[in-house]
Length: 300
Image (cartoon, rainbow, N blue to C red):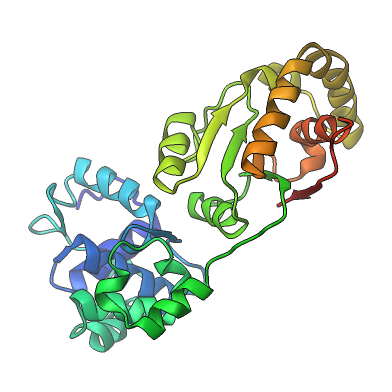
């Protein structure tokens, strides 16, 4: 371990958990152990998860894995494996070291399909998209998984900001609201926060069977936001946005409405958590003013 490099505490927890299990685990087992540890042993979770191909999956953990391989902490390859001589256990808080030891004692004998079944039966939501659930669960258990699936019949327009959210928290909000396409209304869809730049966001949504479309013409240039201090400042900016951008791009609003009628549950997305401080609220209002609009709008 290079002591000059500052590692995130979550990364130290991840490596220490892997250490406790002998320093090497296959991808499937390690994701399940990491999930169960965060769920049962942590109040403030180091990692969050979404339902994916083999159950619970943390995109952030894999981003950290790539970085830790680059730093020489983990070996590359098809498994989670610590490089020789690397140890992080002594850098953890004593309570966390004890929790990891106790967790290992409880789960060390459970692996493979038995471990998958343990997770799926306790946390059925995370098995929703699993491609292997029929191999490890009974018909009765599969029915419980199906019952956890969020289904909505009514069309609804959503808006969602990623400020203050982890990538997985954001993705779960989309999944749990049965959102079928995300409409990105940022002018420049770049972010220093993992997961929210256009390439990563669009590719991840595709993996989750959620479509992505970018409407840059409905964005606001970043320099216009530099001096905003109060709600009045925001309101003045959005009033100008309505008179200029939305007026000039009426065709885009119409195209957005056509997408809505096709997919029925869509989400406008941008950065700000509070819709009152984000122009996506005015984009939603522009849709609501259309004569054909009879649908609900929900900000999540």
